[in-house]
Length: 400
Image (cartoon, rainbow, N blue to C red; front, side, top):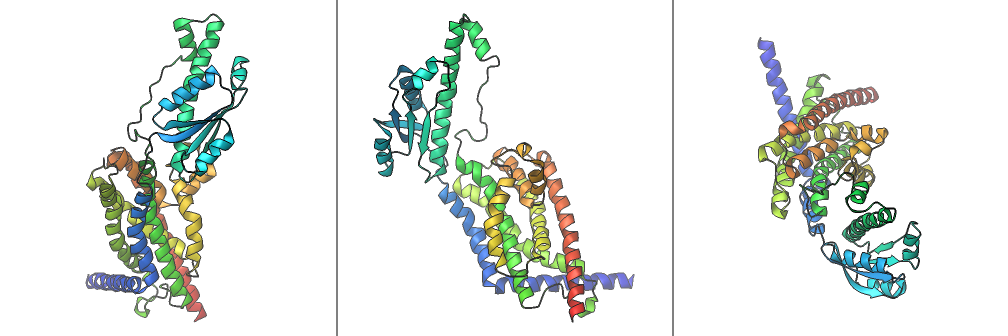
């Protein structure tokens, strides 16, 4: 019994020493401090400032109507009536419209070819060309959405006219064209705000990526200086792998649980993002997400040998992780290889859980699958981290 208490006391003492030593190394490395605190605190603010105008109404556009037909005029009238765009100029040719765009007077162009009405009369496919100012993605989104809305409405009218010509009039023609009437309902993002759409996923990515880059920078520096943490104190005799991993992990957990509350709770409050989730539910999600990020960072930082390698990974992995969350493309439509590849990253599950909690107002029961996945990731990456430290420790001892 005395040996058990002695072991527990020694384990806790080593755990505390390793944790405090890791904190000292973190706060003595300026690069890691920049990544953890400057980037971790500033990125969410910068993202929100960039996308503060999450939606644009009545975006000014020009129309080039080469057809000058009743059909094109009807299309333009409906286009001008949409919430997304406003027709402020009607140009005689595309060059006049381009000049207006270069002068920043318009943000988009819609052009009707000369044969627009003729193709409709011959029951052929007519083409409408659109050009958007790509200085902001919102301009492209607004123009595309407005034209698509009008196009769908016009297509319905054209079909009704053709069925009427074939003898299907009144209610019969309507039932053929629209056998199942539908009503558009956007419960969580009625204005199609890009900030609500994008930032809910980006905030979770910030936590994972800044932690991974900071841990990897520190690991790369230590290996360059031949002082890897895999070299355990002599009194542990190679048996301190778990306390080494958990002690180091506790240092990062203490820092990032505070950053997590800042990113997931305070930033949405400051910038007026949806906050339909309960604080306790979001904090519970963070309690599973942060350990998963810590162990993920430990496992993959074991292959980092140079400090500067992190900057190459930053450019490659950040947009990839963001896309793999499924916020912009449903996971069900992913190829099987990418779907399974997404399971590597904790952000994949945390972003989905956070969106469900904070945007859709779900509860913990509804994100049970995401929390389970984060727990499994934590266990797997913990085991991999221990294996990595064991192997590296053996290699270093053999070289010595």
